[in-house]
Every structure is written in C-alpha cells, then in structure tokens.
Image (cartoon, rainbow, N blue to C red; front, side, top):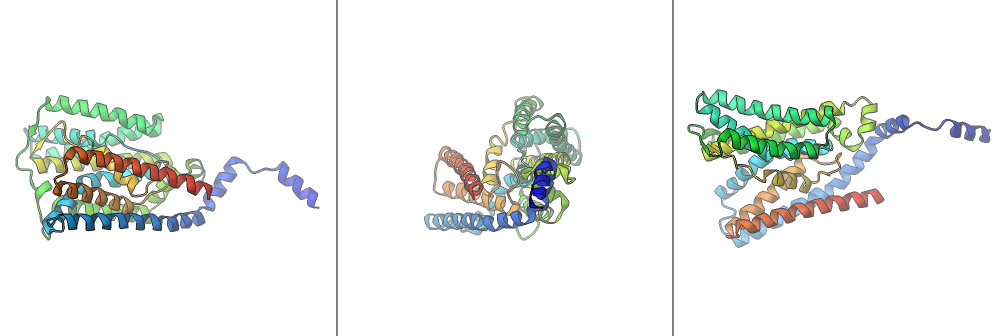
Length: 344
C-alpha cells in the first residue's frame, strides 16, 4: 500500500502551474512574516530620522523653527508626489527613471500654452501630456515587452530633448500662476504639502485595501503565479505607469508655480532623489516589497538631511555627494536584506 502511494506520487508530479498556484494560495503566512520583519526596518528608519533631527537642532537654532519645518515639507512635496506612484511601480517590479525629464517637459508645455491661451487650458494640457507619456512607457513595457529600465532611460533622453526644443533652449516665463506652488489656504500649510498629504492618504488606502494594491504586490513578488490565479499584471503595471506620469506632471506644474517660469533644465536629477527615497524606505529593487509609509520616512530623511546641511552652510556639491552615498547605502542594504532573507 505504501509502495503504491509512492508510485502515484512519483508518476504524477505537480506541474509548474500547480506549484505556482499553491505558492499564491499559501502566501498569507509569508506576507504576515514579511510584515513582522518590516517592523524593525521601519523602526530603524524612524531612529535615523530622529537622530538627524536632534543633531541638526543642536547644531542650528533655526532648524526647529516652524517656518523651517514647513520649508522641509515643501521641499519634499515635489519629490514625494512622484515617489508615491514610483513606490507602486517598484513594488510591481518596475521603475520609471524618466520622471525628472517628464516633469520638465510637462512644465514647459504648460508654460508655452499659457502664453497664448487660458491658464486652465494650459494646466489641463500639461497634466494630459504627463498621462500620455506614462501610458506610452506602460505600453512599451507591458505590450512590447521592453525592459522598464531601458524604456524609461530612453524616455528620459527623449523628453529632455523635446523640452529643449519646445522651450527653444530658453526659460519660459509664467505669470499669474503662483497659487499652486506658494499658496497657503489651510493653517498656513502650502498647497504642495496639502497635495502630498492627500495623495499619501489615498495611496496608503489603495495599497492596503484594494485589489489593485494587492495585485501590485503579487505582480512584483511572483508574476507567473499571479497570472495563474487571475491577476492581470500587465494591466496594473500599465496603470502604475500612468499614475507615475500623472505624478510628475503635477510636480512639473508645482515647479512652474514656485519659480514663475518653466526651465528646460528643471528637475534635473530628480529621479535620483525619487529612487533614493523609495529604496531607503524599504522597497526592494526586485519587486514585491515596500510601503508608502516607508517611502514617506525616506523622503523625510532626505529632506531633513538636505535642509540641515544647508543651514550648516555645507556646499551644495557636498550635498550631492551625500545624496549619492545615501542611495548607494540604501541599495546595499536592500541587497543584504534579500541575501539574509533568502538564507532564512
């Protein structure tokens, strides 16, 4: 009897599809363990943030000033509005490196249209351009099958070149559009910060309580198994790229409002800050891991560090060095985390 059962088990091995389905069906314990492991990581990030705040408050009497704290939040708002959909993309195993060029392009399109048409029409066109750019990237990745790194690197160059062409290599001035970037309609909180808070809350709820959020995790952690149980990975990834386009379009408009102009060189290197904040916040470059809350802590760490170094009169060149080192450390920590979690 025992031999007969063994023969059946050998003659009828589980197919890859069955094994993949079993992996998805048994995922809840793994997810709960991952969440437990993420608690110390989030706590470590909070400790780093608190240490930076204490250090800079001791070194500079102006750091804990209310206006300066608002400056920190305003500075991270532009990056944060892009980093939130960027986190969704990285969780799904994709990345968008065209966000800086995209923000500049949307800003220049909006400013040039505003010279001859109503501001409202210009804003709508600027946002639509971002959505279309995100849709093009999503199409190339999900339908054509081009790697997202290559796709968005190519889009980075294309959009920066189109920005220069559209602006004629010159800064485009913009009048009567200061409210979006500098207005303070509620409790003296700037509009960009309010937008960041609203987008943050919506994103947290989406990632935690909706099918779309769970599908992003599934597509990033095991795309084959996710497809076998009915998760349309291509659709959610395409949507995430569209949301990324919407995010950098809003950031481009905010930059226009803050500067009262659109520069073809605006947002240069913004993708570096975005990726640093996301990875520093605990998202994995291999996908399937990360939280919006972690990205927020990563943004705050970067914002506090940059603001504190500025108050200490540290050269902006050294601030760029610090940002690069922070990105390398974040990626290194991510690789070590994957290695040790794989051993366990």
